[in-house]
Image (cartoon, rainbow, N blue to C red; front, side, top):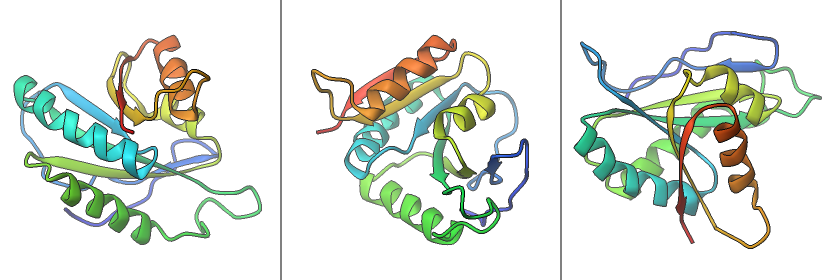
Length: 156
């Protein structure tokens, strides 16, 4: 996996360049949203089989919310630390396929993800299913309402 380079698509969402191997030709894209350590680990494990069956290109999208008192380009937690944490999560999941990690510095996680996901994206979100909606479940519903195909993985 390679290092992150930042770009600015709008005023409160800065995506990095995807890190990982490049692929020639078109393949389906499988997007895993980093939520919590347990939820993300469950989503990575589920994605491994799905990506293999679909021969999909896999992206781990890591939205890092930057509080308003900080400039987006200077988050309180470094991008390198966030990237390393995501990389360790992929290693822990024993993901054996190609995966790219992309960190997004943002003010609002939902708006940022909606602006960077391609239309009708296939998305995996891991979290704990509860009777009352958890933040991960709410995010899944927002993405579904905006036309994305979301698979929620119960990770706890």
